[in-house]
Image 1 (cartoon, rainbow, N blue to C red):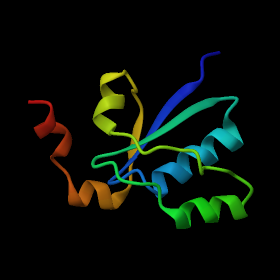
Image 2 (image 1 turned 60 degrees about the horizontal axis):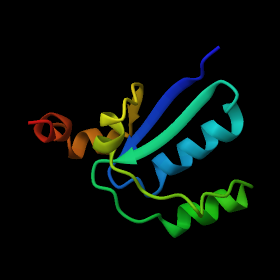
Image 3 (image 1 turned 120 degrees about the vertical axis):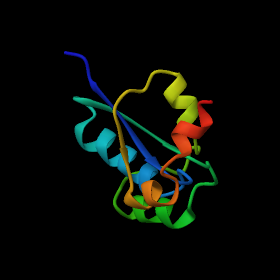
Length: 97
């Protein structure tokens, strides 16, 4: 059976979406292929890295990614943090023009 592909999206892809990607891949990597991206990629949040390390998951080598680049690559299932949709509700539509 093919893995379900999930793309977690937030503003900068620096913390929450990176953590969600790591948790889904760590806990359910046999059934899911998780990725994460941001509307405006930034730098990895050191507090997120530390929190995940304390939980036994290493994301220190992760890089932030653009949601638009991954969308073009065919990632099909996405979730969005509430703050991302509140702050940038039309970002996806306006960038495709």
